Image (cartoon, rainbow, N blue to C red; front, side):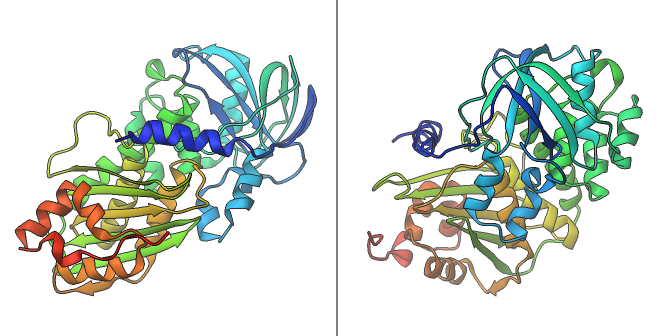
Length: 393
């Protein structure tokens, strides 16, 4: 069967028919604030700002936390992102002592949009869609880059000047203070956290998963000390051509993330799954950053409730779905966890409830999900209990 990475490359290529903003070699505009650090050829990477060809408050263009909760449509979100122009300048990840990187840090630490001027070596072109990071519009190498001074976020500023604070403690502390995940991730990416000698630029894609993992690991330590749920619960949410179901089980912590892609490109019905038990997963998940984003979102809600549970999360992406980054998973699962839960006496009735809401027969998730399959077996349930007609075309 095709792997998730290969499938998403096909899917991403299909979305490249969309049009991004057209700009010339000179650009004056506002950064939301937003920056992007590439991963190609690390540690010598392409870093730079992302700027909209408009002035004023452009914060909504790079604020994923507000999109799902604010009921933004897929078209609106893509519109925001394709209006962001990426400037690129090659720097070494350890070379933070130069004015260009300092400007990127000023942008990332700002709590307001930053007025910017950029001259490009060539006319910006293209666009980028990914399951790992949010889309953006055309890009080009930078010849000249100037910004106006802005007001820094006080929490981020405090972390920046604390050069004895470990980066993991900085990320976790900022999360506890309620600083938006996207703000934490951008500040971490441009090397404003951690002990002074260890600070580095971190590619955007890597920094997203790193922050999800650091926050998730610390939350898990807390959750494992909490009492276990005494019932089976299901939280549900749907948006942006996705359905989500979070099944919480009256067990100690264990976790499985399963996702299906149904007729997004054509007639495909693909299911991918990965899991971990009581011990932390070793190695990077083949499902990519969404595995860690989902895990963090569930643990965040459990820690807030001061409860422990096993968690099986099912997601199906339907026709019309477009890869827009792991924020899609994190914010949808967060939204699901905010919904009132349906409670059930056993896993059979919980799974039967989910099957009524999902397009794909639940037996497909059971076949692919080891944790779900084993839990059902322990409860003496079989695939036949959840058999149903083929998925409608």
